[in-house]
Image (cartoon, rainbow, N blue to C red; front, side, top):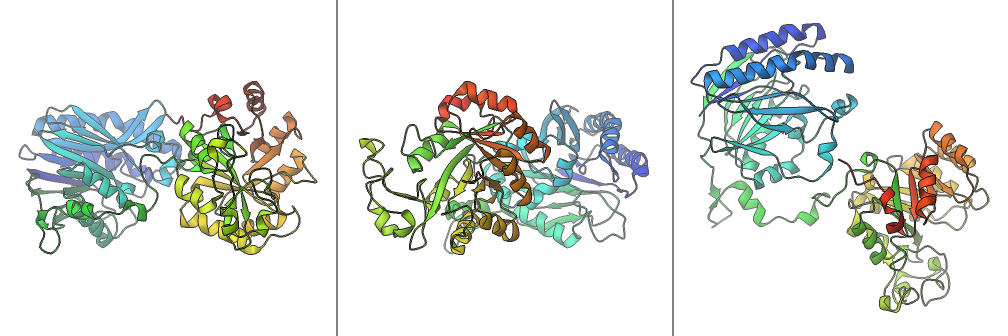
Length: 537
């Protein structure tokens, strides 16, 4: 198979857009019938910097049809497979899209960039498709299986193992990557090929033939050997490959022959790595509102603040769960609502005066139902281990008083555990204590905080003022110390509103009309139809 890379000039001046676009089309005209595979760079419809969102959309719209028409015409004329990247307009907005065009000049598939870059999100591109689990996209043409990486996708190495699972022959890379050096880009490309056991065919743009960054349109074979690297050359380069030829190596000392991914899969330990997998939700700031938060878990069906209650809520689809944290005498963080033990367990006294070992001997299930006899108190770490990434956690950090400080270790250990389990984007702390608010604002601003109701000041308006003062994103209104105006007051100040609480569907609907963003409920199933948080597409 003869592979042809097209690397056009990319201008830093918006006024050069059409000139550069015409130059790119002229390169397609130079493609010949001996080429089997033709690959163009990312955003081939706008090969120049765009100064603003309006220009971006106007120029892509102006050039899109001409580009697709020329690419399809070239595929048919040259009897070649063509991959070209351009903006595709879905019902929900534009998507960064790689079009796969077969030898008959027909569009055989569309790859939507798995990781839209932050700059693209600012352009209000549609990224809803990237918020739900999916296997890597592939398209098979003439018996050759193609997988894809587009620009920012190259930086997510964990995705390479996913691509390797579907065993592609060729990985198509349509890129810009305008800030990386030739050496860095080549390193990434070699890494892709070696870790996917596939050829990597990447097309980018040149920022000028004297530039040391960007460019690097290249072909790399599965053993990581670079067959061609255009660096900052402007134009086209061809190379012959055999896409069905695999690189096999000895799989460890004395082992049999295998591809590199096959060798590494034998010893994989996924529980040691970052949170990943199809059971994960999008991050907290990506999930829409309104939401229903399962207060103390699904506490109507299982003992509150227990793994069964929290697990039941998650299994029901709750996009948020709420639970409470207390410190023990020996610095273990446990989940229980009350300061004292008598209501929920067969013990007496205060939680923070007991050691974890002492608490572990108590029964936290029988008072709810005999079937839960022997249920022990759950630690914060156990909750994180079970549910990080599976739901959003509204974590109520308890205190002796809204105005006196808790031991510093308590809050610091909570933060440390959140970071240990990489839960920062899946949780927020609900705090009433002023000292804790100040510490979070000063030392841990990366973790979201919700301002809770203080015992001596339950007024919703004052709560919003405190949320603003301490840099919180939310305030948790306390029933019934609010009115419709309080919701507007919060939103006018950029504050989201939780409401504690409602177990009645009609009441919850009224709260949504007033502007509630999240309603805490002890009976999640009763008000679950209001939870739009997991209905993303």
